[in-house]
Image (tube, rainbow, N blue to C red):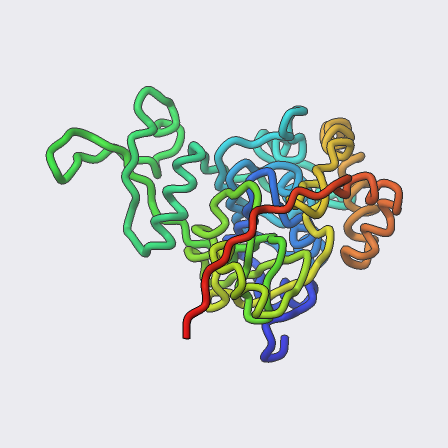
Length: 316
């Protein structure tokens, strides 16, 4: 990449995502960077630890492609539809190698938390704290299943709490509506823990629908979730979150989630899908062309819903 933070997806992944990294692709049902996940697959990254609240189809695809050795997560599944066969097969037993080879992929390591536990881990990482206390794990089996969740005495004498360690990804990847060239990134609509995951990470890639002038960011500063000072690369990738959605730009492709249920149940079908839609596709623009204009048009908003105008005031 050049001195500019604006980069292609290929170059951002090539420089910033390395074998053995812990990678977080965050976005809570909304703003999930499938484009980044697909580029990581295309570039053949290996031995990644994938961290994410609600790992869904993007991590099912990445795990099935053989990029990961471990998954750190809270709830996982195909939201509103079913399970994730690619991940399940890797957890239960070794499976055939990507592409139908004779090799075997090792069993996937898993480290499970509640949603709040994952948020607490990112928050501790962002604040450079040794742990984060929370009360969520009483009367659950998660501390038994995951020794990283530890019961401790409150230092203030008010009983016991649980502690989780900080999560500090090597790379956090966040999709958003817009950013400027310096990486000042604005999001509206449903938020997850994108800010915490970005501040906790060593390297940050933001993927946006639109690159805007700094003046646009300055005109509405409260929407800036991630400041440019922590961003390493800005990738402009329209429709980069498909089949998830981007508020105001395009809707969730429910058809895709329904179709994935049959694909993920069959390893051969899943590997065939990866070949057709990821490995044999030259980037996101070609992927969108393959979807077809009618399907893409059907996902666009049919009307507008502008937010209210705020006057921040001007002073001499």
